[in-house]
Length: 322
Image 1 (cartoon, rainbow, N blue to C red):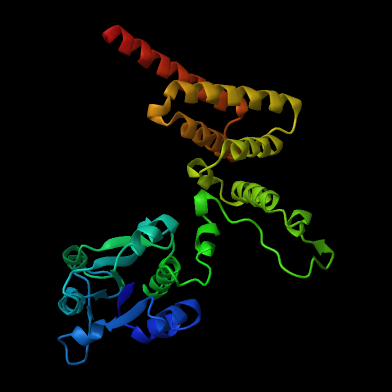
Image 2 (image 1 turned 90 degrees about the horizontal axis):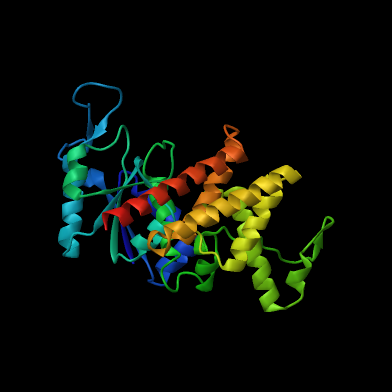
């Protein structure tokens, strides 16, 4: 896979990615990283690439000319117009799914902005995809580009010594990765879980999957609605939710009632409307609502009861119209 980075600081890219796993991948020819200096395409004798913004305002804006000329020169060399990714906090937030999508490209261009950004006309002409690392602002796009290149490179066959690692790490199957341990078996009074010392592969795999579910619930519950869970894992998740959210007998009874309402709601939705997945999403939403403290279990039960009633009305209306 070939990465091309349009930047004002090419050395930052080559130095940052020329070591460790990405460095070795470049040496083996599995990936290539080219840093294109946008300043080389400035028409100004002082190599200026920025100017004051029209309409006033603080800071400077990168001009469209040098950016577009740098890309067009690259296209001429490659004989095609590769996809362009622009690093900006205004874009969709980068994740493992986007990494897999981008890893399918043969050539990929990363456009790194600076100052107050890049003239919008350049972004339009290049058809750039806006992608962000998160809701924060950095001094330039080089660091986000390097993070994304590192992530995408790991998905290129042969880059990792053990390709299975890419499939088993965090976000595989929509879950966070399970805890990892190595020697010694006991360190400062903390022991490695006994199951990992048994050599029983099936038990170890079951333990790891459960730990992934548990860790995802604790740290990233927002991932669970889309996670690919088996029936056994879904039951384990509900058991964890019951332990956490139902400390008293009264709450346990209400939680059972909520599960019943969600089950009936999911059944009414049917497979055509992804009822099973909707049930999991409903439980995750209920958990988030309860954590806000703005409502209680009884309120959530009432909400899904209303959802069920609406579905029943829709069904009756469809039957009447037929």
